[in-house]
Length: 158
Image (cartoon, rainbow, N blue to C red):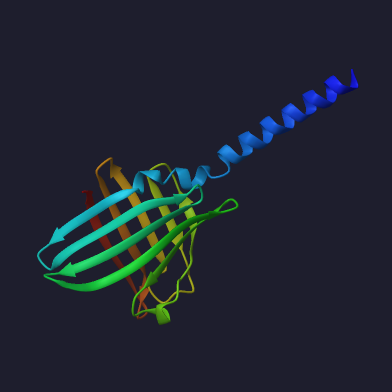
């Protein structure tokens, strides 16, 4: 009887651990719709953003703004879940000594994710809003030179 109870306990513990590992990245899984390539063609140039899943807890992103054949803006982004917290960490070439800046998820629902870093010069807030399966709007905002500022970038799936 003791062997049966011990075996049953082991099985239940194993099931509990498997369920925990399956759900441990539920927060970042809600942003899986971001995966793929996005684009906005403007008269000033083309904005592209590409996301790929690296592992259960991490996505890698890249943003480019290209005017004719010149790259005007380039940034690499890591979207990662650490414990119960989601972080958006961009590294922008030519800014912040090319060091990554961490923004923490402060608000979210199924279609919108807001990351903030009140200590950053600009932006202090970065938001991604899914409009539908093929359209999103990325918005950066905060205070710039002491004045409120906001810029939105609508993009379509490529």
